[in-house]
Length: 357
Image 1 (cartoon, helix red, strand yellow):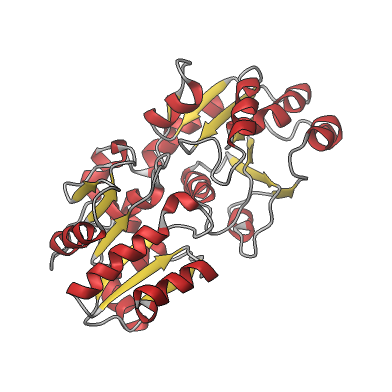
Image 2: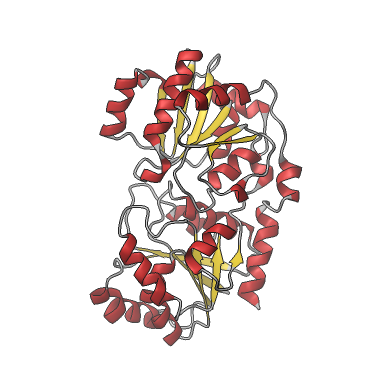
C-alpha cells in the first residue's frame, strides 16, 4: 500500500520530515510513503525519500482560491486510487486537503500534530480557526505527545505516536566521537551541542548564546555546535557583542546528527515551547547529559541525566548546570530508551497496524 504524507516543506532541517523518514525506514517493504509539500528549501530530503521507494510531489501553497477550488481536486483526480491513506502533518491544512482526498476514494485520513502552538511564524489566529474546521474532515487524530494532543484536539480522542528514533544508531560510540572531534578540530574543547533552526523563534537562540557566553567565561576552550542552524545577521551581531564569534559553529543542515552528537559534552535546549522535540530524544539516546527548559513537555524526559531549568533563571545558572552535568564517561542508553518505548521499530509497528486495519 501507499500512504501520502502532507508536510509544508521537506527541508533537511525540518524535524517533522526527519520523523517521517524515521518511520519510513522502519516500515515493512509493502508500505511506501509518498510526500507532498509546497514550500521550497535550498537543501531537502527528496533523494532520501526516493531512495526508500517514495515519490515527491510539489503542490501550490494552501489558499481558498487555489487548493480548495482547483488544485487539490485536480491533484487527487490525477492520482486516484494510488493512495490508501492520507497522513497530514499540520491539522489546520486538513480543511484544504481532506474533502478532495475523500472524494477521490481515500478512506483513511489522519491529522498529526507536532507542536504546542498554532504557528511557528505567526498566523496564530488563522491556523486556530482552520483547525476548528478541519475536525470535520479527519478520521484519526495523532499527536507526538499527550500535551500537544490536548492543545490541538481538546477533549477529542487521539493517539500518541512518539517521535521515535533508531536508538541503536544513536547509541554512544567513543570511536565515532574521537573521529568527529578530529575532523572538526575539537580536541581539548568543551563542546556544547544544540539542534534547531535559526528561523524559528521558539528555539530561543539569543538566550542560548548568552548561556554559552557564560560557559566561555568559566571554560575558555569551549565550542558551541549549532546543528541545523544557519547564520543570520542578527545572531552574527549577537556573537560579536558577546565576544563568542570565534567559538560558535553554524553547521547548517546536516544528515550526520547521530555522529555529531558523539562529539559533544553536553546538550543545551532552552526552547520557549515545543511539541515533542526529536532532537532531545536523539541527545538522550546518544547518552548526552541534557539541560533543557521546563517549558518543554516532560514527556520527552527518559534519561536520569536531564535537568530542567526555568527560562527566568539566569544564563549564569544555566552555564553552571551545563558544566556540572558534563562527565568524562558517557552512558550507553540504548536499553533504557528502548524499554521506555522510544525505539522506532516498535513505534512503526503501531503505525503500520493503523494503516493496514
